[in-house]
Length: 93
Image 1 (cartoon, one colour):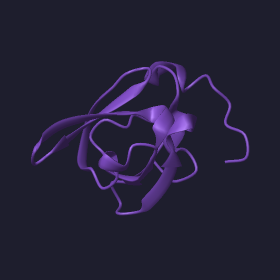
Image 2 (cartoon, one colour):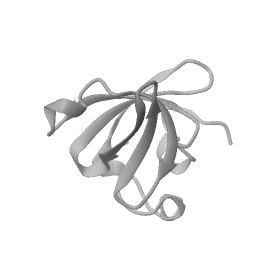
Image 3 (spheres, helix red, strand yellow):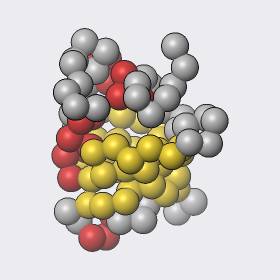
Image 4 (cartoon, helix red, strand yellow):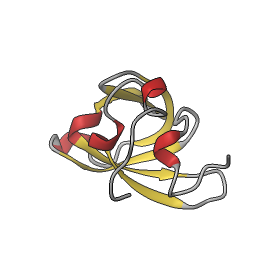
């Protein structure tokens, strides 16, 4: 199954380009780079200035899919372990 805006929450995010579009912490807005790690509560983005860790609960991310499509994802939808997202149902997506 290819990554698309409709099924991005059910795929691996590591390796995708991302930018923090909104955040409760204003210092994090604009962080851009490649996602290199994901835990239950955080995402690690590799930027030219080093690795930045952001809490999923606090951000909205713009993700670039391999075909160039941009998708805005609410970090609250990414809560939990990456491997458990496959089992989770997404409402209203």
